Image (cartoon, rainbow, N blue to C red; front, side, top):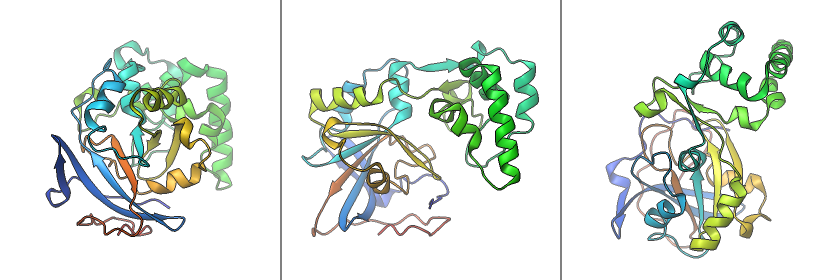
Length: 270
């Protein structure tokens, strides 16, 4: 189940610094009997075209220890790859305007009720598939089943982010970020170049989607990896913490941590 927080997770009491890198304690999660402490690493606003290897080297290497797993936001990898679409390059058509009126609206982000986002989906997948997905989605909602639209159109459409006027970052008001290209290869490149084991995730306060993994953790169940960050320690506001280092601390005492009160207390973060 999801855990929803209000506002920025980067409270002063949980801030630490090491070798010029700022990070925030995000508490301990116990997964399959093992205690993991999480550290959310603060970065600059990562722009399009930056080198993701160098970004990871700058912010993660000083904190990383053997055995750690680093969760990386898919958004910054896509930004580094410049796998984005500007709003001015999307030509809004009739079907996007019309169908968006019937799309499910959510307070947790921008969905297909945003005409430009729906138009981008049409441009990427073609109108026939989008129409079929809309019809199937509408019928299934009558029987209480949701998410059918995205099951039909695919993860690449579900992963489109941006065109969000309420974002704390103005760049995302007029920019859509697509899923990263070859995420497994990206993780493999990071492990080969830096010796850092990582996973690329599309995470929010509702769901966690693992998009890519380093070769060293391909044998780990996806559900186990998701559980490590189920409470979305990267945050959903303007935290600028796209890297979360997950560390097995065994029986060692955890660092002092002031919990951020969740809206939904279904998950206990110690």
